[in-house]
Image 1 (cartoon, rainbow over the protein chains, first blue to last red):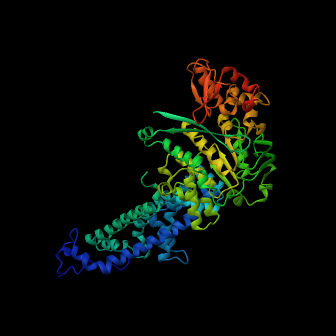
Image 2 (image 1 turned 60 degrees about the vertical axis):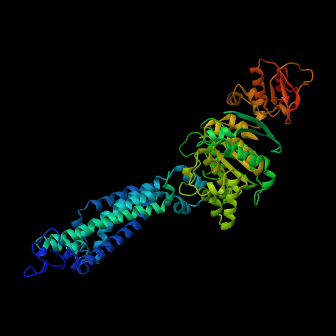
Image 3 (image 1 turned 60 degrees about the horizontal axis):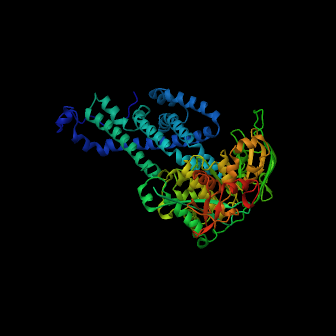
Length: 239
Length: 390
């Protein structure tokens, strides 16, 4: 199995840390000693993987959604392709990318896989947001002399923001969850300590700490999007 | 609620007809007792602004002259439709005139309007604005020169009232200070406090307020032509009448060329300097002043469309001040007293309610001006006398 070098259950013979030797449910000592060496690097890589994947996924999806918004015929093929990608089991997709030239056992493969999973969610949400802009608003905007580009940037995208942010929330949480299997192809993430814990006959503290960090990261990211949406859509407050 | 109704004629509208502004000023008790709704005070303030302080406000900044609009043999056919939506439609709207397009659904009135700013492409004919074909213009530039108001208003929910009004000036790249100044001016014009209403979002406004903002937005860049598609159609009847009056007051000041679409013949008669009645298939049945339309409908379709009460409607176009009254010095006994700003239609109704006896007509100062009788009413339409003759 492809598991990156990982911290070990520290020195099971003669260690001063009884909690770890007994592999109790949770050892705070271990956390404090391994934060800088194990957990923080894993968290940092995890955040980086997620941010890059969501950013690239958003850019691609937004372009596709705007295209499908202008040309309705594009919607079906785009949904078909992204849906197929979405349904490929994640472990399989990660492994499938490795033999591809230029990808291999690298961050590139991980990002390609993660981006793939954001496309369907983001595309659908952005397109829905664009389509739900009220017809009379578009009519008024066109009638006042907005060009197609001005209509998109000044009216359609701002009004689609709530749907776009909803999509980003789901996509981000999905990516945070999926990125934990990146160590399968040799890429570090919060999955690294988890795989290490499993490899070491299930060292509970390491497993729980890394898993907990992933969950916390997802919750914080989700909350940040909620706050960002409130800041960006002042008109939808206080109705 | 006690309501003092004052009928006022504001002189100096386009020569074809007098401004028929009806003012309903609620007293302060009435205002205070009905919070939340579109308050009568909104309108009262507005009308005071327009009617009494017009000279103080002066002309709007950078006034642009209204332009004549001409539709020349205009037609519109949709690819798969058997019948034309618009067929050989020709009409001219004088600069500064209100032309109402009216007709049953399917008569193509909205289509005709949207051909003017090229939201719908023409199939044939030509449309000239100020003598220049709209087909020669870049359509985006053209639309920025034409105010556009629709029934559902279409305010941008993500922009404040001030930002909404500033839409076209921003598209035109005006300086920031000029936009701010213009926005403030327009909010005052529609009787709204720029400090209070300007920073609000449209969701915080009532339906009537939104419609006013929609009109202000359309006027923002001082367009020489204004297109209005059933602008008051979604408003309840009381507020609709108010908005209509306000718009007439506004039009008396800004004097735009206006194309106004409605399916309501009463609204057409009230708002239009000229009314174009369209029939199914988008052909012009009659294009005339409201008075001509009511007195002399060209065919049965128009007669049916304006209604069997067209005689009464015609009386509604003139007031007691427009006709020669009978001498009232010999009149004895108690008779209803009415102001001379009352329409002949309302006067006739008052007269009938009073049992058919004469009405004592008072002038603006409350002095007896003359009397109005059933005989006089009967003679008016047959051309016996002055203003309301057919």
